[in-house]
Length: 234
Image (cartoon, rainbow, N blue to C red; front, top):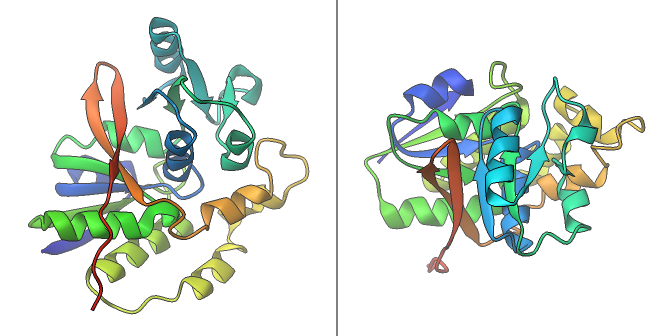
């Protein structure tokens, strides 16, 4: 098994094999919270206009964040903490963000695509080990899909190390990531869309025991829950 790590939208476009899209702060983390919250259908897409149209067609709502769209235009914000407080059971949600959801849309060379983050890292590793693909590509989506984000690269490397049975220190990672520039929004009192609790939830290692597998639909990618059997340990 060859495990590669690439970055940003350009990396997603050339990613091959079993592709794992990583956007820790916050889209691939939030996806797990949405499914755990009981959504009936969860679809990601790559533009606000498309998200609005898809939501209208399906009787759904739009969730996410975009640099050029006011937060008030979304039905739900891109926040695990806020979603935990909302009743989303049975809803159809269309998710659009600056990087993670767009990454899922461009993996044209992939055999299959899943979401990965710290919150379901073990499930991702167990899925990979059960599937035993020839090639695995972890895509650290980065800021806006164009610039490295430390949390995405470090999560990708964490998962790669776990697959290849190299040592990891999550405690060290979490301490470091609290102070990176992309985490500053969680500690900014002027940002009501980024509660401080989001940092802890995004770093809640192995909270979920499932992965989210992408299946193309018109205009987007539907994410479906795949539960992972407990891996036997020696």
